Image (cartoon, rainbow, N blue to C red; front, side):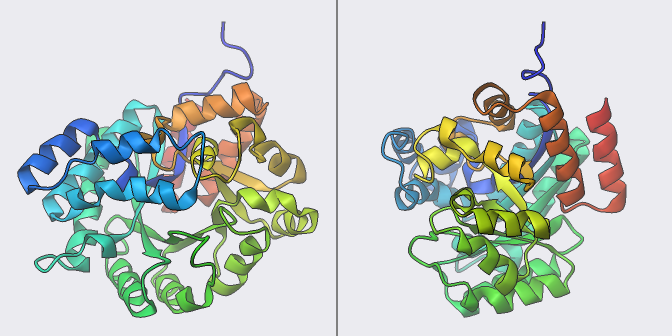
Length: 333
């Protein structure tokens, strides 16, 4: 018999998942052979050892092992398509895939080629599975302002074709200043894209308020250190900031020491709005269904809590009105 805390563990909205962290191992091997690229298996295996010595910089280096597989637009399209298919197989009813296209530009393929390929892949995935999916284009902290503004313009040009949002990702511990990224976010906002930002993953609690103020975002990726400051926590709750939690990956990045230390319960009790993601599930071995089980079995979330999380996710997702209704209907089944 399913207990209250075990219920609803196989479905939900995945609002924080990286395309570079969803490459099927078999696809990685095939693409590496076709592209003459190094197979990333060694880097992925290294990621599995980070749980004992979590470090954001090292974790991101492991994720970056997949980058050579993205240098061909057809490969990008395939990876995006398969990510949607895999999400549907996991019981997900909506998937947002974020990725940094500037990392995948080559002499032959520019930003528009890369972004269009990812958008085409999610459209094909939606057609094959019936679950709405979108691309969240990410600026990267280690790239210069000019590059990130070009990324924002490429995202804006693709708005409405599968691109639904804009993000800032990368190593917050090394590039914490947000001001250089504000122009890119203004470009994305003007195109009607949803805005989110990785913050308070490696930096302190103030990073959440800074992202809201400087970049105009309503959603925060990870935000684990927000719980360290009661005043910052209260302000986030009062302002309706949505935190995209990814408990398992936060151990790998060093944001928390153990899954049981994740502040999801603290957030919930403080009235902070939460949604869930699986971040880089190939590297962590934890898809969204497993992350939901973590919430129920290790962090004390009841089925009522999970239903509340789903309700916030439906509202906060970068969806059209018709898609939002379809996702709500799928959740109610």
